[in-house]
Image (cartoon, rainbow, N blue to C red; front, side, top):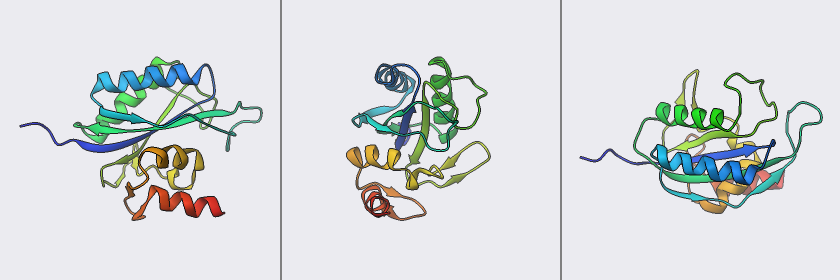
Length: 159
């Protein structure tokens, strides 16, 4: 019997190197690692938030897909891909980076462990996550908030 596929959403961000090339490589690696039916957003650009002074602007995107493994297995895959693109395993919070892969949604699960929080705790307040995600999954529901990506984006765009 085939394992249940969970719908997942991942945010991609980076502000060092050629983000477009790095994102393409990361998406390819996610596919090789077991993420199926990947659909990606366009690239978006954003100013750094809560980053060290002088940090370069970010390139952002989102992808959705399906995953048969556990949330922790997906986190491990994402971290391995980040490291393979040159992001140090140990890094300062919000330091400039080649690649950041954040698991935003994992089906309708709510996870709150020391290593993983899903939905991502700041995703619903970040336009650089919501805009790309709304492009490819506007009707996906944020568990705990019980609003769609599009509804959350509309509220945040008015602020």
